[in-house]
Amino acid sequence: MSEKKRKIYIAGAHSRGRTLRAYLEYLYPEIEVAAFLVDDMSENTETADGLPVRLIGQGLHTEYPVYLGMRGANQEKVTNELLEVGMQEIIPVTVELDRQLRNEYVRRYVQDRGRAFLMIDELSVGE
Image (cartoon, rainbow, N blue to C red):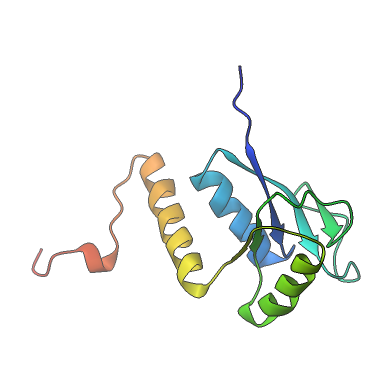
């Protein structure tokens, strides 16, 4: 019997959103990205990395959390649009959260391949 995955959306279908998807699905196998959300289809295709790209407000599950996979300058506008259509949980991906996810992704990726991984600040001076 397979375990049901927790579905989420990622607002943003370009490189930041796609990278965020890779981090989240690798680090948290119980998560499944249902779609990328955008506020304008003119610069987007109907799919990205095999997932649908959907306009904000078009038949969304308002109970799915939405991660903001975009530059910080765009987050306030998109957050307001998501709130207007009734999205209940919006998670801004700050520089700090992005760094944390990236570092943990790289650490796990390297370790899953049987190699040691240490951050520079984890090394002891003189070793």
